[in-house]
Image 1: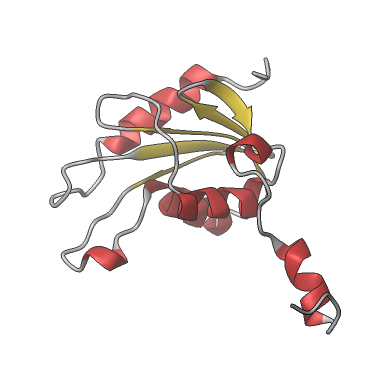
Image 2: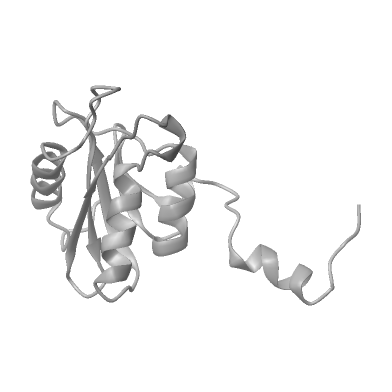
Length: 141
């Protein structure tokens, strides 16, 4: 599944580097994320915690914010690491963010190897699920 045009080692290095900038004084679990945009941009993010735990920002949130602020476009590759540089999986909320900005063909480095986002988040909820409801169509329950 690995794409020879994607430099997974460079993505991993960028994720490890940005994990070193994480603000994680409460969990002591720094996370770094790196992604490759379709236009070739490298985007990164790290987790930013808060004393009010519910307003923490995951590394993936920072990455997506950077992607959008830099001009948007789809992600084509993504990886996420912990403080030791080990590949970790995004949480459910972050998988949804990644789906929105990478879609089913986004390649995600996982502990089991590179997988498509459609494998990481099967039966994803996206804008396509909203369209019939917005038009007043769809099955009633």
